[in-house]
Image 1 (cartoon, rainbow, N blue to C red):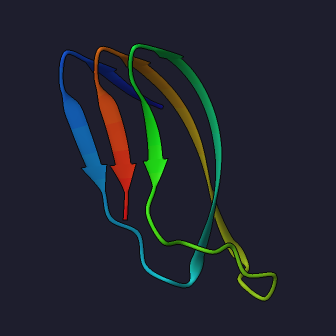
Image 2 (image 1 turned 135 degrees about the vertical axis):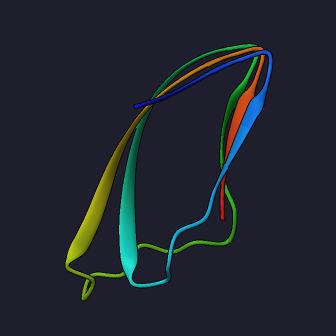
Length: 59
């Protein structure tokens, strides 16, 4: 779980990891930059995010 309040988080992941995001946002959000989930990847990260006046950047 990642929570932001008046700030932000940069999350860097390797290319061989898939990510599934569930988020609850209020004047903020989660940005997924140029990532594609690939079927052959077996590693999965489940992200539960809460953003209030802030954001999460996934690169």
